[in-house]
Image (cartoon, rainbow, N blue to C red; front, side, top):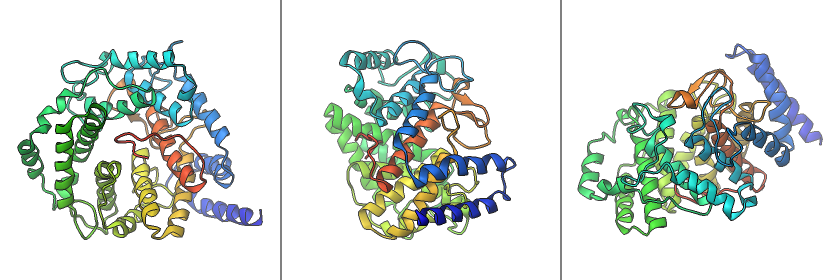
Length: 399
């Protein structure tokens, strides 16, 4: 008990310093640390976190049906993306296990209704816009890489195979595409190539494992072999940047995280683990998040946290230091939870996630960040406190 009190006083002292830094509403931020984050960190209460988080998810229900959800309170229509995030949140808390087979089939039928038989991708008229078909941070391929997890938690698979992948079965095409990238320069980070490779790779792995597609297996193996050949031995990651520049370092780690998932799922050893850990540790800021800006985003946070947890479990390298780093990160992630139970993508910023029906106002909770930050907490809690968030094994969703 005395150690806990001393630790809490130390944290409060640090926060009194942080209060005088960059946030205009520092009283609010400090309040979230002291009233929510620190108590939860010092004595983690799974049931309390579950209750308030699922309370927010319940508020996002659009109708009396099991599966229709809107993205945020300020949005006006339900959409398939939001239903996928709701399903994945419910799954982590064990709620999907409580559904009957008929109820799970209702979810699966709902998902199937949006799938195109020609390419296997999912199209919701509510979300149609000029970036949906050819973006990878959001859009058709990105949704497909998420929805496969929702299918798995419901005990099913999509009605149609992912036929759009067939052009990636051509190894010559893949090589030409990958060769066109400048893997030895920081310019590789400028485009969205890492998200695109991740989405396609994840779906190739799913096509291989859930549809028994050998051609998909050959393609993902080619991608993995090619990427291994392009790793920078100085960092264990891809590209080349000024490692003293915090913005470039952060982008390098984010880029690597998206590609690492393809290797983690297939249990492929990349090497350079200690170097990867060292550079990833450098991305933590004074608030405990992992962005250059102090209000680090859900993406920036999970990218570094995921890497650190996986690699420290494999190596034991800097285990004590990483445990401290992860506890600080846990406190910061919880700061991004509102009193109503939902989470924000970035504190003090509105966020438009590809479409106006997937947008949230400044400090407004939404389903995408609630899923992403809940997943981050699940990784942290399962590692730090040996609790049992339910995380299934699926391509792109590796634990």
